[in-house]
Length: 352
Image (cartoon, rainbow, N blue to C red):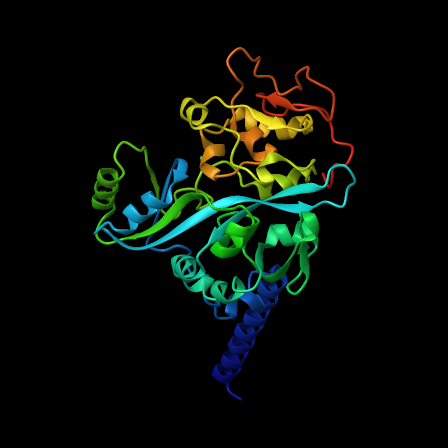
């Protein structure tokens, strides 16, 4: 072997050694390695958008049937789903405090399901024979499809579906319009409208048709929950944090909201309960006292329970505005309360 060949062999050996050393150093440092398994997999299909192309229209006190017909008759409306809201009187199983209010919508399945979009394709079949629960409501009651939701007066509803909370606008349950009427959920709180043309022309048309009635318009994505009202947390989200409180059979189970049209317009209202409403924890009080709901939200719901009405009413003029319970009659009496969380703790509080 000549001197030149020996030099080439030595040079190649040095290059190989340097390359091997470099690879060992890189592998040891962790800067190069197998990619995580999830990074090489093709991403799955995205969740279809909810309520795409819909506009939500709400008003203090909701809409009468005649007003809904006017909205439907607008040349700027191609489709409408009128959403009725109220409360199901769910049996608590606690003696003396038999009712847990469950925030519920009553909807026409053939109109609401298309408004939701592809994600709501199965709602129509689900609502045909029972009640559809949100995931939060099903979790609170440990219920699954095929089980029964027990109401007061020994009434039961079969759970025919459990869906994402956002499909129901944050409400805990949904029933058909026919079933809702039998359960006292009849007042239209808001409407989902598919406009024919732009939003501005829709606003102009509906304001002309409904006269001086103040209207609010919302589009998907403008608020965390696509629902009527003033944008505060849905009752289900409050329950998940602080628990549920059963109550004695209240007037909302068979009657309208206790906030009159005049009090809804002025922003002042009082709620009537057969006992002082339980005082929630300081944290719960701060949720509402730091960001008080706007006026009329209880009336807009169509039928307000003490839980929601207390959260949606400001202190009456002259009230201190404190979240501590005011002096009032003993438990079991009828009292008109106007502060956010009146009364004392319930002996039968559930959860929380």
